Amino acid sequence: MSTLNSHSNIAEHSIGLKDTASNSSIMLACRQQACSYTPIWLMRQAGRYMTSYRKVRSKAEFLELCKNPDLATEVTLLPVDELGVDAAIIFADILLILEPLGVQLRFAAGEGPIIDNPVRTESDVYNLQQVSVADPLSYVFDTIRKSRRALKSDLPLIGFSGAPFTLAAYLIEGGKVGNLARTKTFMYKYPDAWSHLLSLLTNACIEYLSEQIKSGADIVQIFDSWLGYLSPADFNQYVLPYSKMLVATVKDLAPTIYFGTDTCSLLDLIKQTECQVIGLDWRADLSLEWEKLDYQVAIQGNLDPIVLLSDRENIDRQTKRILAQAQGRPGHIFNLGHGVLPETPIDNVKYLVELVHKLGRTTKQ
Image 1 (cartoon, helix red, strand yellow):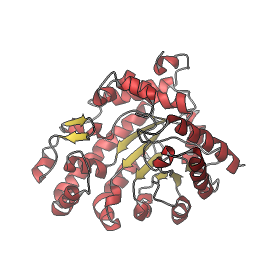
Image 2: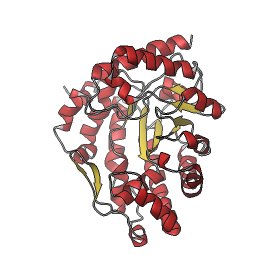
Image 3: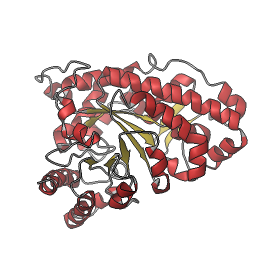
Image 4: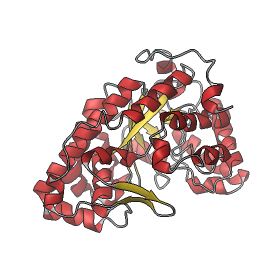
């Protein structure tokens, strides 16, 4: 029996009626309100490290899987059943939003995303289609509706999007991202075209996330995966206005998490977006960075994913360290500092979830 069918006896959750989910541990943490234990979900919590995922993945290529609401819903639900995490996150990809703009996207085995018509000139930017993304991405919203109906009403569903800067980086680099030499050169050399590109992507993200929330997403995360390649001055000048615009539109519709990697020098600027939660990668000292932010936002993170490749002694030690840094303070959501790696033993992931629930409850007593 598929995971989707196994949820068929759960009462359907009315879209827009989120009062039950609003009192869940993660939603309370997003609002920096006290909850009885530390909630946990994991980036890339459905993936190749799961036998069940690989079975579903064998039925379709990656993009086909993303575009099939039945299969994407099944994958979305797998970690809820197998891991006991405190939220589901929709199965999709941050680059799906680029296709309606006229971008030719494909995924090659062992290479990741490839964009066959990258943005390299000013004219390339102005040739991008300025269209509504709602209809072309209706399969994502169908997945959200199906997942929301299948999930228990008190378990939040997380939607997500790439941030305008990170989407621009993929567009300009052509898929595989290195040191962002092309992206930053374009940003410096063509400020008007850059502004046009970021405005176009921001408007697309606003529509995309708003439709996700309307379809049943309780929380949204903005992935600014490559933001750490920017200096504070460049982030402030070339990117922050668009990040602010995006967050300003969605944060009142649903709690909004802003996540980037290697962003310790940028956290105070990220805070200016007024997102409710800032995600930290494993490079950050959670205690120190949260204090610098005056505890005015919730914090998500930040176990190094590679710890899950080691033994339980190390998982214990590193998990206790992070929970100790959070000090039981309201507003901590446990997560990895990046996504679960494909070679991770699933038993270690299950153990982490159980450990956080156990120790997180203890620290809050």
